[in-house]
Image 1: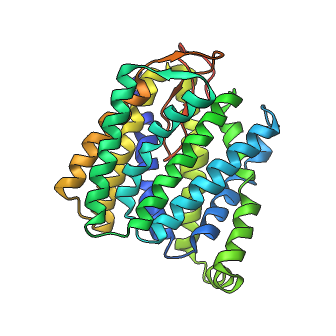
Image 2: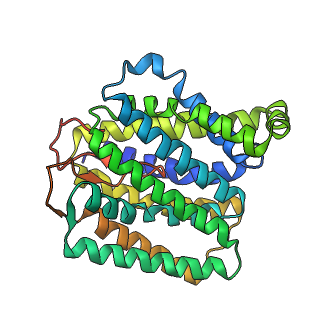
Length: 316
């Protein structure tokens, strides 16, 4: 990769890592479900006029929108609102790679090889260490909600691989249109009109800036830049940069929010990152129809639907 492209990949990882800190701050302005709805509303509505018509069937857009936008982000925002630290969330969410491999084995007939199985075991050990660390002084329910968010992310990854979208930004923008109304409805049902109204009435420049960051910087810029990199380089060259996301997430949370990082958490980070690297980058043995291989793409967020492609190949 050219130095400029390496810098761009590192910048995207930093943007996605710092996003957890921004979410933490944003939850002080908005209820979690309303916050998630606003994120997708601002990301999708202006952008649909620039990306063109959807390039995959609507069933895939709706399916990924519900699994990723409503379930994954809804659970993540609620978990963080209930006390899950931003840095730890950025780390624990990476267990989605294990869920993706398990779901792909069932739905896509991809049999994980020995290295991938080893990576899944190492990553699960990291989750166990993180659970012990969080259980010693944090809310267990919030931890479980983030794990559930990672599982929903795994479902959305498998659906995305089935859809095999040729344009990552186009796909992400149209996926972002799906969660808006369901999240708004859930917010009204569980968070209440009064709380939502109060949050919107108190909207100030800092709150607006937070929405712009999570919508346009992490979503539109992040996925646009990532898609550009995947079109010019093999996924095996681009995907490893996503392992920097929890590094940026934990370090920015420590610097900006004062979150402490215990020795157990460092141990969990080493196990999780190492396990995810083995799980995501190892090969698979296919027993079913050939599908598009994936390398990890975090925004926390989404796995990149890109095979071992040469320069100039289209990516998601």
